[in-house]
Length: 442
Image (tube, rainbow, N blue to C red; front, side, top):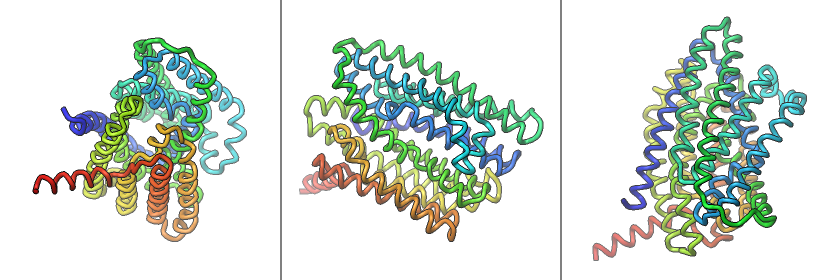
């Protein structure tokens, strides 16, 4: 099986699981909007967005580089370094969880509407954040250890099924507020159980890596050099729309926020289909780089970009065609999100065209070089929201997100080309294919 065929095959399985999970979550969220009201759905989305952002910060960036270092240590057979990395990552989660529980409560009220919603469900939200942070660490490590299915399935299959199960149990409570409170508690406990089960799988996979060099101070310093910028990269990419929702909570009413939140969940689903391509090929990229095989390394990037672009275009067309039907499940008010959803999904095509610049910069030991581009993108997001949302509402929010992602993707691509000497976009691979086709004709 060729590299391209394997990428498509494994990415399709992972994306199929994500599609199933997203469909289950959509049904649950549609049921919340229909039976409990759009306001309750808005509160639910605010809590989940806040929990996601807090959870990605809790490991202090180590979950964002878990795939990177797990793949490196696995390819080199350095089990002791892997074990040391894991102790540091999960240790950060434990310490920050205690700090959040004790010191976070008085600080949450300073964040306006999201803080008010969070304070009403503080204890289950803290437990949910702890479990989510552990799942992020688990998933990253399992992907790097060449167990992508085990890494992704906890979040893509088991958690969505848990949401439906908890919603069915909570629906038997009293009024809508009581049902919602019970739902949050059930989700928190269920997330913790899933995180613990997946952690056991991580330990089993890690033990199969041969022990080699002990952990040294230089390696710890290298972890931090990668972790600090990558936590910002993860927040600006994987959790871009969670941040955007918190910003928009100051401009949009609860119902409009719920509409935009549903649109962002559709986008996140589509984006996962592209991210899975790079996750599958990441271990092979490390093996080519470690072997100083630059042609093989560039081929890995080119094939991944080609598959990612094809998938993003196909998914964009699917979303444009099926978006109205998906949003209809939530009620008539959610039809206002049809056009903004199409605009959001254009951002995915832009990101696929420019390629995995942040990953390539990290492989070349320059992760900090990504920060100016991210700062540019987030600055444009805030400024565009201030200018467009008060006037154009949901469409203004979608255009602001598209503009931010376009500018930072272009800046990241330019940075990688200047500092690493590599064009990480799909352009080189397309030129190779066109040149090969011309040679065949001759």
